[in-house]
Image (cartoon, rainbow over all chains, first blue to last red; front, side):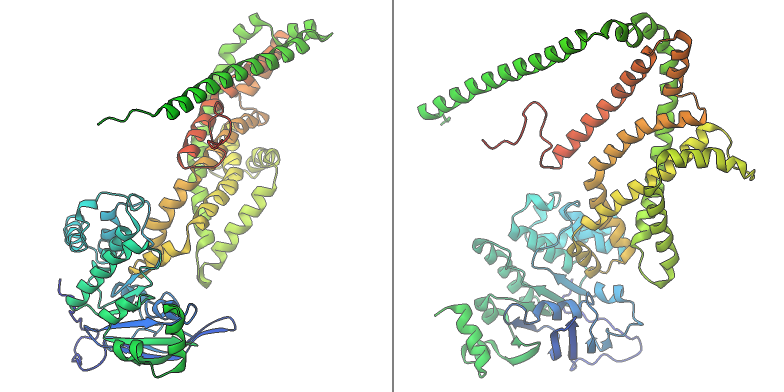
Length: 262
Length: 288
């Protein structure tokens, strides 16, 4: 698998490598009267890791869900590989298949074995044969260190193992970008490490990722850019050293003080 | 090294064993006392000799048994055929109610209206209307046999109930499961077929079996259309011997038919961890 592989979204049009792989511009999303994302903009370049930080309710999850088209934006544009994916005329299923999403609560399918969780999309969406899909799935499970658990059911695994299966399930479709939503928040402290180590390896392999997290140590280690979300906007962005070590904005300082304690 | 229970643990185990023996003895005694009181009350009632003669006549029971058993065979066949049809129609109704989009408005509305009407109508009215009304239309292809019309009425009514059971199962699957499936690129239909339905159906198997038990008894209602099932056969035998024992025989046969179904439901419910589904013997939860 070549993680940074670029697909040609519109045949015949030259792919611009200098342009961001994922571009969010002026996105607004409200639930009733509650405005969650307010004119939010964000660029993610190929092979880069962007980490989203911010208080609960600052819009991190909603932003990721909007990018994966699990929510419709109220305004603004999201471009993936130069293509406006917020266009309602587009086949949303085909777009989602190009994006790998990993959820806080794993969301594995409890009635399917690990291998079947991973092969479901290749077989149904990419129309791979069972043998083909299983070979591919085993290779990805090998990569997350769980090939031995292929025949297990999700509830027979630890939380950390379940989350690694969920990552494998998202990876197997060779997504252009991976979206990870607080993927360690539901884990016991001693299980967080195995998931973060895996993500660091994926970064090494050149994957493009947008990660919402509360793990500041991890953010410092893997992020190319850290974005602090506040009141539905990117309030401050920069290198991890700058945003986490020497924030310019008072809100950012306040947030970091609160989560690291006195 | 093998584990030898400590003295304290051995003492605990001995205590628990003695309690268990005591519980069994108490259960036995209380059951015996209850049955004895009930039998005594029955036998000592002033009318008992007459009731015994007209409801519990062994010879009548033996002689009417073959006819009633033959009737029961019809109940079993009606039940089997309608159960299959009910599951198909009900699943169609439940899925129709989950369809999105303006195109499907008539389908959704029809399914909702159907469930509203047939859950509200008493089964016996549906039986009479279908049994006597449909043939009156004299349409081509409409069955005229009492068994076929009775089965149709059962399917019409039960599908409405079972559709709601399926719908409850579908709605009990957490939306995050659908989100995960859709995020992988599955279509709405694929997510329903491969992620939601397998989990939903597994969850509703105990209530479905419950409806199957109810259906096995209600299959007896087709006798009002003239089909000779166990109930109708018992009625005929009762008239022949001027004795009510055949009704008791039919009752015993129906119970014998449904008990295995109910026990099977319990086993499935326990396996899926339903609270309150402990075995009758243990009586209550495991916590002391």
